[in-house]
Image 1 (cartoon, rainbow, N blue to C red):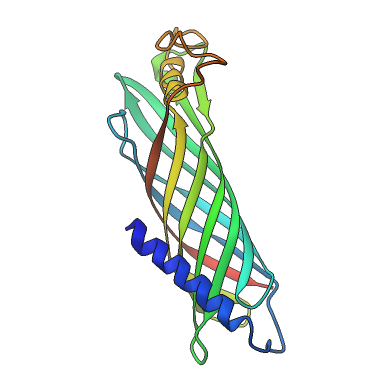
Image 2: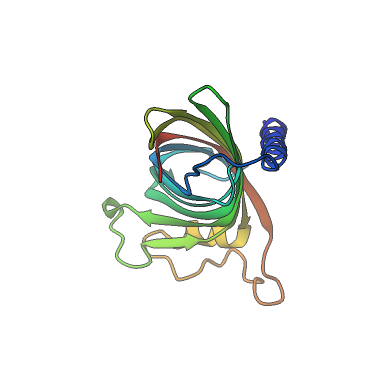
Length: 225
């Protein structure tokens, strides 16, 4: 899957770069705004409660530098309820990503394709459910560096309105294992501000980084200005 998405991204960028050398048409939509539904499947080896399905919303703004190349800023939020060691938790994420976007409109058709490579950070929060009688240290967070590679298809409905039936991405998140275990341990009733699972952690030993990965599907509407 990663190879397929990578090949799609490279192909779209190459096509965009070659066609960008041709004379421009009379008009160019400078800004595209996307908003829609998003589904994320997160995989995290041997760590409960993963793998996990997350549902939420996604918004993005693309500023078009040329007819085939732009820069995209994206924000997405997801949530799901989970259980860790019989304790009910709410798992939420907020992602903030930015990167280049290559796009191509098939002449004579209402179809446009795009591919992008985004970089940024994801704010993950674990919150203990009130039913667990949590009074202190009821939530904890980690903020892993995140990359997202993928693309999608847009279909023109009117001059300014497009429908995005499918956007598919593969993402990676570099998470400090110490921080993740501390977050799970902290977000429990009666826990301290930091677990004792890794007392050796400190400035000289920042931790062990492992990768969370998964697939993300999004669909919605795009407005061109």
